[in-house]
Image (cartoon, rainbow, N blue to C red; front, side, top):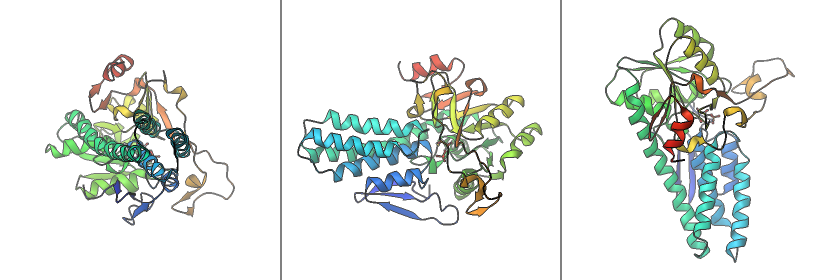
Length: 346
Ligand code: MRU
């Protein structure tokens, strides 16, 4: 891939600024954890797995700057760093998964001197990034065969290289099918209000010469009805034990339309996106974002001043609409609760 989503470089965190794409390919450098937290909140970096990587790197930066004499004092301050990063975006569970993983590393090495713990945390953050890339390739290996030769695939939001350490989850499945030589076509929903589909998915697929057609969100149902879509593949921000899946707002509508039109609807996600502590999707926290994302497009007003607005950033697709969940360990179908627990050995 010809861009780097997030990287640890010279003890700093470098991220492609996704608020500026596709107009400008700009890389921002962060030297402290508060900057990383703001980057997550402000969507410089977004997409569940990429948020997880950013959170881990933010914790590593925070750990580096902690002044302490004892492990207890160090760990108390590390928990504060984690709290600040944990308050940025509530829906993608990868954020909390990565923070917990970093805390565990600190605890497991509490007998070491503080500088060694700081080094272990840095190494852990870098391995979360490296692992994510490998995981996405595995998701692609399992999911690619689900797309047939000549397949026309609808995707929603951006679950691509930009939303991960690279390659992507839903777009990883699409990339794998494309790389295997199948002549596939992607239909990208523009994904209002933030336009991840138009700005990011179209950009990264075009960059890699994967055929993509952009549609506005309200066109998906009609294309399905006309027989112009063969399957749907989307990413996920949190998957509950019964398979209910939180993903970008509008995913639920796509899933219902897919079922109505007898089109397979797949979710592609790493195991770090599973939240088996939640029995169903009903208790997944849904982020509400600022009203200006709805009343404006790229800073230009499109609605009357003062209009009342709702802006839930995610929705939950009930498991009954999902044909399969594609993970790095294989594709889960049918009894999601049993299959997902078996996948993680619970
Ligand atoms: O608000 P965003 O852009 O962070 O939302 C992203 C999504 O909903 C993605 O589909 C999801 O995180 C999966 S990314 C591989």
